[in-house]
Image (cartoon, rainbow, N blue to C red; front, side, top):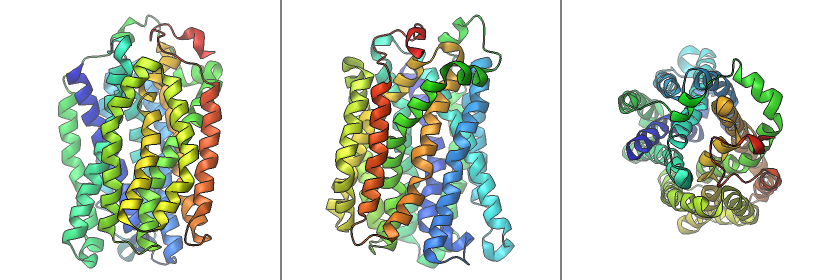
Length: 423
């Protein structure tokens, strides 16, 4: 289990590195480079628009790779998704700017971001299921939390490289070529991830299935559509909170508050370290007390913390911003530490790869794709403190709280006997 969990963690870390490095670049440099004819605000919104395309592609990736995972096995998904995401990320670093190839530059950026999202949409389902379906029932949340630590590591890798480049290069050098280096590094990371995954065994639960679904997505839509919508709505708050902290606040802090890139990145990265460290702790609580109570607790904390978070951000003081970000990410990890066990337990094995991944990534569209765009637009019409952003995030948290309340508890239901709770 340790070897399997480590390989899943490494793979998700690499894929989320690819995904996050784009978000950081969108907040810092992509607007002026690829949308130079726009105003600064419009350029940032356009860059965040290409960022959102990755989220729109993720459910489509879930359908594509979920079909493979439910028909051919979880293991092939891990290789194909990592290869696609890694190749498209390297290609982003090679796209010339608007000044060189004109409108083709943002078009290429859009296409490559779509391919990134397509690959990541398959990654989560494959990595989580391979771990969850190997894990003993009493420790399923703990072992399944290892892939959930991957996004924190990927974020720290992406922003650590960006931070080092930002601190060591002039603004002109960073805008000219420095921002491309993290994208090029994705190629080496992807090769390492493929090597780590080469020795993984197929999921025993998949091997036990006697009759595989011919069209997994059609079966999910026909028999489990309510469950998909509820899980998507429930997970929306996690995405909204995470990307409000890691993407929107970075742009807001540097552009509106005049805080340096280095200070903002350090504050955000420190909060992500706390979040990653607490992931297995919260997962152990999920194994002991259940999945749903942890999700309801984290969601309630999000409802209560969004207004304090934006108020602390608006101070521009590093310690207070770190406190605001940390509170938000603790509420986030309280929920997302257990969803890697929770979602697979909600779906029957024959459509689990498709159903769990589609629900998870639709939540990303609802909460992650729109949040940087909406928050940027709302903050533009706010005073010193962006209360509109706090209200927007609180509304999403209330929606998710209602959806979590309607979902069933799954612990200690065995992973092979969930048909009774899928409705």
